[in-house]
Length: 274
Length: 316
Image (cartoon, rainbow over all chains, first blue to last red; front, side, top):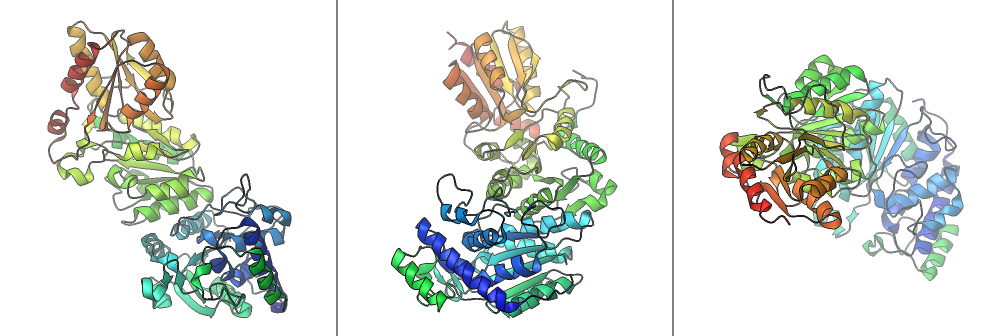
């Protein structure tokens, strides 16, 4: 794809706005996953406001690129971005995790903008591969993106899918790892070490790019670079901070799956506004 | 019945159906996990190499890739042995296929005890039970090669995931070539008023053989080919209860949760009559020839006759 000019200052603002929306949703819902939602904000912003060709008013547009959030628990970030783009009313964010809401605890296909239901870890990359293969068969100029968590890639299916994408030279596929260094049980290196992550993907015949996943300039440059790589899929290993942007949530794993109280929410918003 | 025809395996019928479906609809694609010729997908692969995807020994990835292809507008058939097509990938089938109700068809060959010499690890005897519990799932166990071909072709336009279980060994034809086949609608292959034998897969042939023996002993058995386990043709079951007052289910699967379980759920809720189940009895299989195994595990015509004679005593 052609590198387009994107104003990184406005994307930074967008990221902060999404963080506010995420925290508001989670506070309202009273449950959910703040840590892993906040860590992937810039990765999502880079997709929805730079890399993806999409039409929020026409979610099934045949010419669209496809994004799969394999780490489904990060969906508050995705919902916030989709609402901001206009896929559904922003008001609906308040219904997160409520009975009869389209904003399920983990993403469900049917909500405009959600391409695949995910939530059970390790399944998204195979789905992305299948979409990329179908696009190739139909000779579509479609790109497919898939964000995984770092803990998630401990799943065996991920490595089956890694082999498949390398074997089929899926250069229309771009994977992204939200490498925040934590999983539910604690630090990844203490639980089941994944290092060296990028080299693992390289050895599976992927092109790997290592970036700071909160530097929006690096994020969009990585998406642009992935679009130029021929003959192999690209994996962006994005070093991120779990709970990014909120001092008392950063790198504190207790925020994996606990929503902020009203007080904590107010404190968090103050930090984001400063 | 076309008894003159040479027995044939239902996996052969599946392979022919794939080819037919592929020729009729270019959305049909096939995925295999290293057992391409064994599952009879090789014929499709050779005619449509671009629409064939080898996934290697990676069943979980195969199911997910099939889901992606379906999201991309294709109608994928993901093929492997029954022993690996359900249990190993149950959660992928649950979330990536059933939850999204995607048009992914699972071609599961080598079902049941008649896999034979390979033994217990390769004899799928439980997978229908675990698949049946999944919302949006359709399960078809064709009785012969013709029916397998028809089920495969029909699965293309049948909405949602469809699991088609076929056999390795050759089995006599029991369905007519031009007979109407419809997923979800049972076929009565033999009329009778004394008892009903409800069978699926190659035990339909055994049930027909059993009915002949029973007839010689003065018992007229209805034989129902219940090729679709889910959605179950409840009307056919209830008609059997009303008309014959006793039911024997026959399947190459454990009696826990398969065809027998599905039939019993309907019978005890809506029209209680005595039910006897012919199937494996909460045990693993062993190596042996298909004929030996059908006999030893009490799945053959003789066993069905014994079950029918036992239950007919209990009839009101």
